[in-house]
Image 1 (cartoon, rainbow over the protein chains, first blue to last red):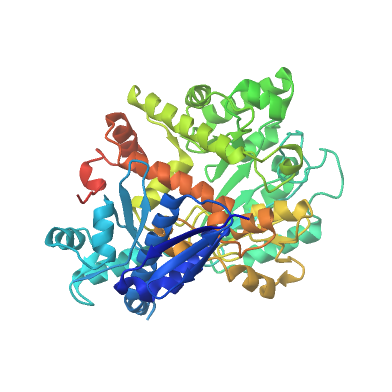
Image 2 (image 1 turned 45 degrees about the vertical axis):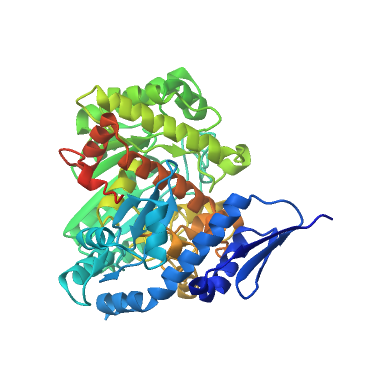
Length: 84
Length: 469
């Protein structure tokens, strides 16, 4: 069976969010296996995938994971401010 | 400066929509997204974010408190029971193709409240803390059990400071006693009209003679009570929908200003008689044609009309505090301020839960008048009614305006833990919010005119649709 492989390089400041990103894109792309390889995410599948969409989902996934992580404390402060 | 977290979504025109969790939004670009995510905001960005309320200088300052206030106003507060749907009978004098619940024939026995159940209903109402009550009578056809309606209404008027009654009736056969009952100023009529005579006859009344009787009763109700006290909504079969223009013309002719477009409901027995695959795309296409037709109608008429649900979503987008429509709110507490009591005394968190139970899909009752509320079951259901911490919803730009519908999830998938993005509720609301934001950012003067009417503002000015280049 033909194997489709794609690797996307992850900038250093985004690497802490690679695991969270993989957790999310794995369910959005159930036919693709993702693996974090030090400075990149490797995607493997049995058939060709929509590369433009996959790249965008990975990039957005990294953005979202970073935004959520960086704002966690702020959201906690909001809940304290509203609910006491 | 600190920025509140922004969620984002690509728009059809290539721009990116950003929303914060208090409901503030703006449109910008991929370039801004990268600057924001990578922590490289420029001076124009920070000035814009501060001015628009998406950022603050220090915790506790004016901008921080204002954001917290807007955010809190998006949260549906827990409140005491004050809205009760009562089903005094399952008997009905019509046999609609898409009847949602298990109606029985007009003269069947054993499908009305017993005197013991009626006493228990009154006792439950008597024990409520609220001073203001809204009672909605559903069926079957509730006017077939007029005596019980009268007893409940008399009791509520004497027990509560304020009471309001909605009779969900097919207006098919209204006796002189029923007209006298409906005459009261605190009593409203909610009926169904499927948008065109042909569709209403096909789905409900079956013959022209029966249809004429319904139409005469609807006209009589409107002339006696006005559209302030009479409302109607169409049920649409997406495989045989009436032309949007015809629905609009018919509703306007009756004097209605608001049309709540509803498709045949999946929850009840209709799922056995109707096909629902591909229905989402068909419905999406029909719904968009309908909104386009309403906007065209409004552009040449003084008398502006709305599609209720889209107008409701737009109001939720622009203002917090719209928690009264129980189908869309967050958290959508079950068994709290709203309860359904069936003809047999069983309690349900929503009318859809009653439908799901009636077809034998699963038992979503939460107790009975006799045995009380099943708090363990209610607690289980209420564990998933907030979307604030759902892994899909917390990344969605529409979170501040949306809500959960676990009864729909249970009904369709038998579980509540499916990823939200794979649920019908999520997909259909993504489509609806996408449409709402398309309209908000439209340059078309006709669209702006309708938006102004739906939102109750003199003009829909560009400040209401902020953009950052």
